[in-house]
Image (cartoon, rainbow, N blue to C red; front, side, top):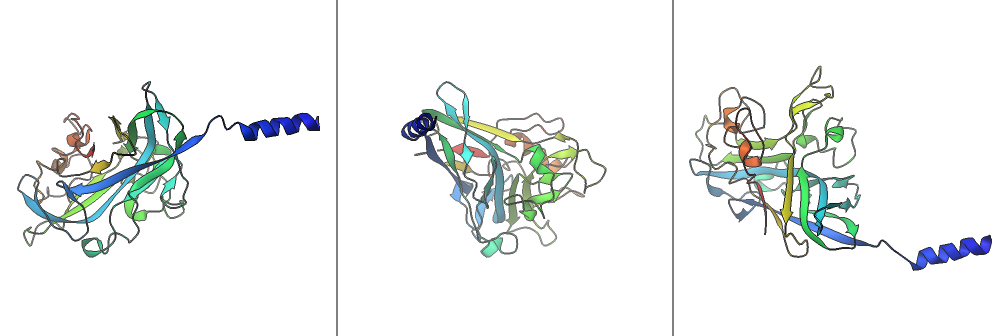
Length: 279
């Protein structure tokens, strides 16, 4: 029996039938087609050509996968690095806490997904901008990284901001809003209070994206909110609402925005998403 077991062990060592290949998906943050950097002013944004600085630029990505040549999806097994990636969720952080980002951001940055897939031929990329429901309504003060990013959290009922891009007009009126913030998260979540987890959310607001012809070796995922806010006036804010568009219902600042994230909003149907592209 000992001889048989030894033979199987040697065979296993000699035959790695399902080797994995490392894969890195690189992301770039831009504003109006220009590379994003804290402290840089970007002109010509929104319906009134506002100039803005950005104070925060982060997003959660989940369920990344490569598209096989037969059209099926191969999930990317993310490296569990104890900081940015856990399970099938990763936090991308494009700000470095300097200049305009001082006070809201931090020095550490993460601009890629890192993991493995089985050896094979792939022709595209898919991922979701969201935190899955079962991980979205937890206590961030006790959750492991990256779910301990409290500045990305609303409350237990609403969960995390999946996307946070905080823009501050540099030429706004003295009594104008403190900024125009683009925040995406789940809304209309049912729970007894803000400090209790909901049973469901009427508006999950998950952005599921797929790009064919994507090669991780040569392509880049680009995030740019400029097309999304093209019809919004970034120097004003609807009375009695949060600054900018934070996904909440009945906020007129969101009427021209959510559809461009590929999501329906009230009676406004979803349009083609314009936040993410590849090149």
